[in-house]
Image (cartoon, rainbow, N blue to C red):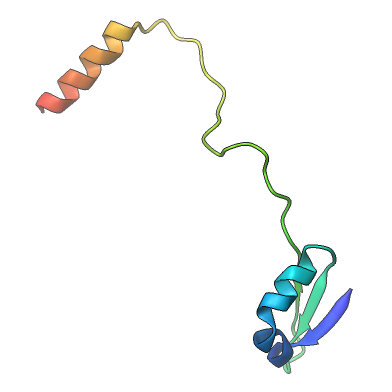
Length: 72
């Protein structure tokens, strides 16, 4: 883990983001507060990729509902 002051972190943000991909980065402020910077694991699937559900609705039921909502 590497430790940077707030000023160093602000001046080298791009460098810190690259470093955070491989290791944890700690940023310390003058008031003593400490923050940790780590990269999130990238998701392999789309956030829109959701499991389907079983329903008794037919295609015609869905089309009728859409038509009805457009007429209001």
